[in-house]
Length: 196
Image 1: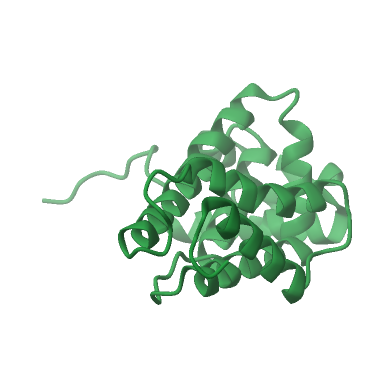
Image 2 (image 1 turned 180 degrees about the vertical axis):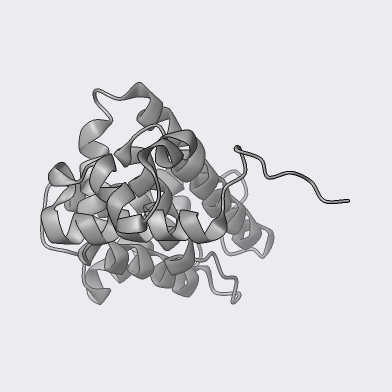
């Protein structure tokens, strides 16, 4: 039995084209000059289609950024929490330093103050899931004896990510390998991890 096409179902090809168009335009024009009309024209989809799937350009770029960040920063478990966190943070730092992702994320953050829907989407789609994954990775290290029982894992995640995003938002120099290593060591030392 063939089911009729649903207006609520997204074509993956159109979705990818829309996300790529938004990222390309962000690189070419800067976040502030990107419009839904321009994204639709570049992607070869209608404006109506975009608004059916996303409420704003910020939501389009948030989905594109989230996809890229998840791909660039997996939570691996090699058995060495320090090495794994260094790799993870380095992936985030690298993504934030290259157009269009760094400028797109800065633009998204600038809109949060006057777009409650985008702020909630950022929390639901990016922040909360990533924090949960980070806490789960730290809990695994705790189970392996690399982090003491009773350590405040959610606070450790904030300590780990805070400096990365602080530097990005304030356009400070990006962290190099040595700075990332020092950050990870500091967080693990604050948790009372052996060897730090």
